[in-house]
Image (tube, rainbow, N blue to C red; front, side):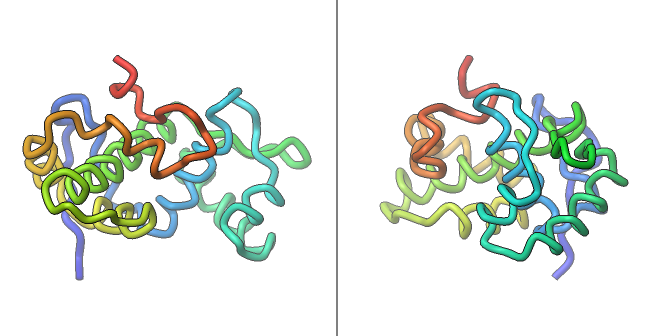
Length: 160
């Protein structure tokens, strides 16, 4: 199934690049989550442990994300999101947050974070915005449910 994403920035939400696939987005979002508390670089081993995959797979994906200007990687220092990568990761986090909140508040169903991510990734920007209108405040508790270890929201607009 092909995913259609908007090509312009709508309402401050960054559309996903056509070239970004679901797995690449999940890696990018994970780098963003791990580095967000203190703007630290994330080591490949830390990323592999978080994703529960082999370190070699991380190295390949980091190389791909770096080529697409989503992350910056320095050997032995780790990886960090670029300005472009932060905007896209925040958009992915917002999409996931809206889906979690919609399932919670409208459907009365507690959905897991990975499934919410997949749904949010596959829907066009306009669909996510329509879901968002169906819940009063989609970010009240969604970030805590998605990343309970963080203690904070990862979506910039959420903190405003």
